[in-house]
Length: 99
Image (cartoon, rainbow, N blue to C red; front, side):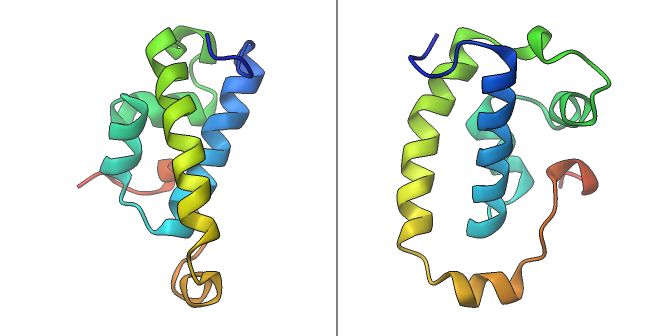
């Protein structure tokens, strides 16, 4: 597993961070799932607590988070957040249907 993501709690926190960055950047739900390598239903079940995080945590998921989070952080740092914040309401992907 990645250097900083060793426990299910750390991985879950990283997924929540990715979700927040995805909201800020306006990424569609399908892109979020594609980044994580999860289906929309698996993601929503995990996010809602209906299934244990340990079931979905794989070395591939941790590797994807390790690649995606630094990139998304840089993208967010170079995005005019004021304009995006006015157009985006905070939301978790589980609250929306996948296209």
